[in-house]
Length: 96
Image 1 (cartoon, rainbow, N blue to C red):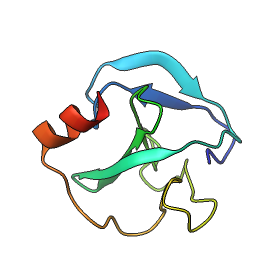
Image 2: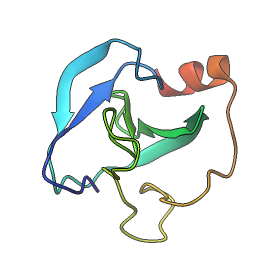
Image 3: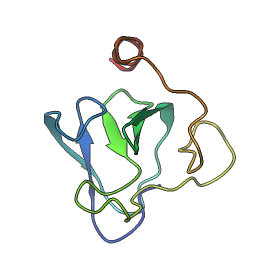
C-alpha cells in the first residue's frame, strides 16, 4: 500500500535514473507485487499488473517509506528484507 501524503511515481525499470511512466500510485493505493528487487540500497517492486516499478522509499528522501506491506500475503509488498536479488535481464523479462 502507498503510505504517506505523496503519490509514488511508476518507473519503467528498477532504477531511479530510469525513465518514469506518466502514471502514479496515490496514497492509500493497494497493489500486487510480482517481484521485489534490490538496486544498491533501494528496493523496487515490480507491479503485478505490469505497469512498471515503484520503490519502497522516496526517490528524494531515502529515509521516507512510501510503500508498506498490508498482510503476510506474498501478492502484496513485503516491507522486510528481500528474499532474493534478481539478475537485471531476468527481471526485465519477467516484468515486461
